[in-house]
Image 1 (cartoon, rainbow, N blue to C red):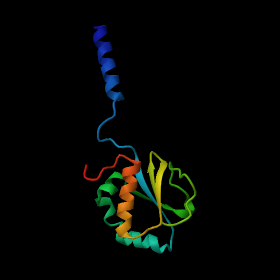
Image 2 (cartoon, rainbow, N blue to C red):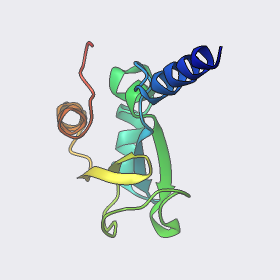
Image 3 (cartoon, helix red, strand yellow):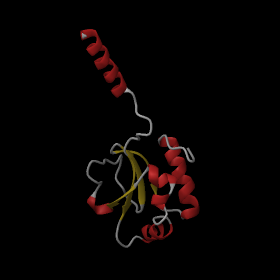
Image 4 (cartoon, helix red, strand yellow):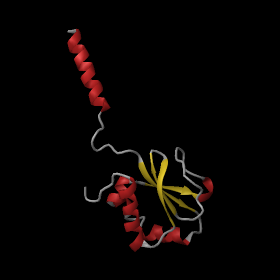
Length: 126
């Protein structure tokens, strides 16, 4: 009976140590903005309504941060943010990439998708 308990305990320990499929790390997109930013307003008009309904938005949910308030709780940036909007890709609270400025919707999506593919395990259509 002792061997059986040991075997069950070892099996459970091994199972909990395995990565669980479908459980992603905490990847988010932080949009650093400020009042009066025309490019922030353009992003809000052109991208924001669709963002949560896209594969990219589902993979990296959007969180907003004010330029003058610093990073959200639990998030650290690699360097100071000087421009708005700045889009900071974070994983488990650490910056893993950024896009500075908003180049328009025709350029934003390819640049952002490329950033996700290069810095995370995001794969469109997967």
